[in-house]
Length: 168
Image (cartoon, rainbow, N blue to C red):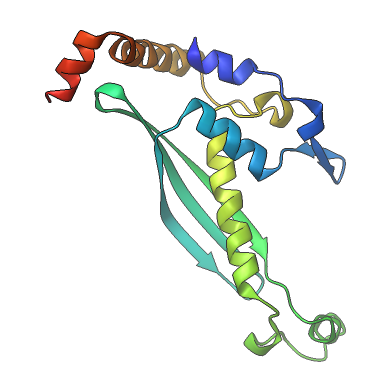
């Protein structure tokens, strides 16, 4: 029921942006909603790749529930490296290739790729599902997660269960 509520929550249209005729949500909104539903989580970088044009990150995002229960999803994000106009024009004309000296700022591309990877993982928990139209879980997975979260909610709302959990 908890995951269904997240999945079916309508995103206010004021947060929906368009890029190339496709709707998307700003990272700030996705992050806010994710933290609203899952206040305790951790991110682990599991892969970073770089070639002459792109920087790509893959992350694991884990949410921690009471009783030691966790849910983990992965997300991948990529960003194109920015090069000077002169270098780009020369490469497009076939006059020369891009060199490391032609890059404007790899830090921005790296940060953008990592932010996108985290956002993609957050969306796999159902944040903005009405906009991104992602199939995030099968019915069996939703049922299993609902049972896990229901058990976790018992721990949260029952002081005796909290004491038992804290004594572990």
